[in-house]
Image 1 (cartoon, rainbow, N blue to C red):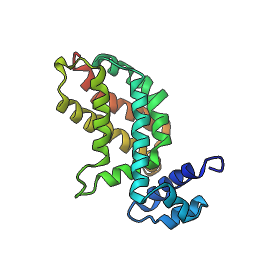
Image 2: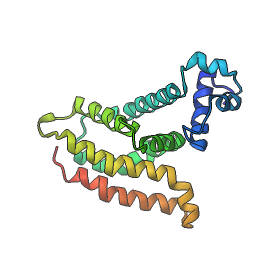
Image 3: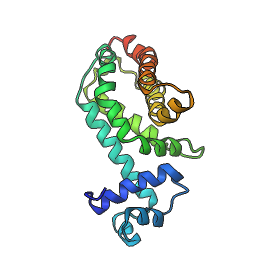
Length: 198
């Protein structure tokens, strides 16, 4: 983290602290101490802890959109066929890099009185991006949102967040765990894509 500029160091440290102590349980002075910056520097870059989380979420969404933009206009069948390769070569690395932030996003999204959970913003951004290149004639936006959210986002984020503790608790090797998850993912999210024509 030494080579990062102060703003990036603050953001990376915030992810670590938020993931360890929860967003509510974290304090700006803890982030400052861990990032080895004065508290005033944090307030120079960010108005509040909420803004730090907002910037982290926006960065995550933008990076995710760049990934999905790499394959514009794919049909459902093409998406289904690409799942194993994309999981191995794209999504796994992206998820591992962002696993702590995903923990924070999941916890924040589960708050009962949260009007707009961060996860909803991510699925909305993904669907909006997809609509730019999709054949909108047979495009049911509500179905796409539900399918992506409940058969892809939630299982994928849970898989990434729980992988280490799951493999230890259930005494399963990581490779076997990854293969079994991919099999289940293909049978659910992959099946959704296979069963659609457009």
